[in-house]
Length: 430
Image (tube, rainbow, N blue to C red; front, side, top):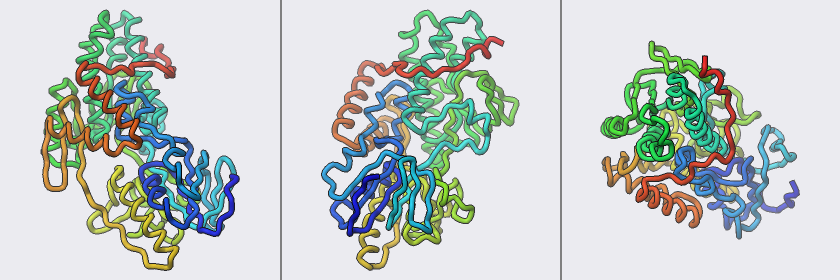
């Protein structure tokens, strides 16, 4: 990899997400050599991926070059590579560009979409965990409406304008709200020769309420906001299959749709070599102790979505969100310095700052540490928090300007099919 030898310990970080970047920033002025590996050369602000999918933002607004994050850092190196295997006994990584040794390894690979072993859903449903996937979804949504203009069959047209979102968490709720606003304010102007009133947005939740990780008040309010926008909410309904045309459930409910968006769960993105059953906890995550050390490997750490730190307060580990990853990255930076200097490690303590979700224009729900509120004020708080955690001044400005423009004009300018998503529409003519 053409990385020079160093007298300082080498810390290899796999993944440039929230956790990996927070750790790298914490190690900036320390006596260590840091190597950051990622299959992409950019960091993705995943909470706003749904806005890329629905044409509210362009992808470069929520992406930031990893090399730019490390500018001015001494003894820091970035390599564009995907890690294929970890060899703990040799303290060695195998990657797509060669091998690299480490003194300390930090796994921050994040999470990926969890289809729970259903290969049919994995083949035909649309996921939304990366920028390429979001661009595919944006193209498919727009292509479906273009295709709907070309058919005289009402059944086929309805299927093309029917959207089914599986999963009532923040991603599903926010996406449903965005699609409902597109139906209300944009589709009638873009497609005046198409009866867009027949377009449907269905949100399917396997449990008995939406946003089940938040308060009941937030759940009830979010559901009301969605219903006011025209979203059909289906609770206690589990999807069992989708062949690209028909969504099947455990009930008698069946959907005919050209677009099934899967937001029903995520799992840890493990790597060969650290995927033994005894290392894996719930959600396909690596079991770690209170210092984020992978169980049984004192010089291997895991942070963020991939790490499952179980305790009495968090029996299933910390939530797979940005805040735990950021806090774990910062704390691990301190602990690595302590470890190198021969000092004892300090346990990680998660400070829950709350959770929030937006449902649309002037509609959001917030559960903060000591206060819960919904509506317009919650929407402004949601915007401020997301702008604050975006990386890069330019990105903050671009996103803010886009939001202001979209709010004033009730428009989404990024309705572009840049990279067509090809699918076979013939099956809807049966």
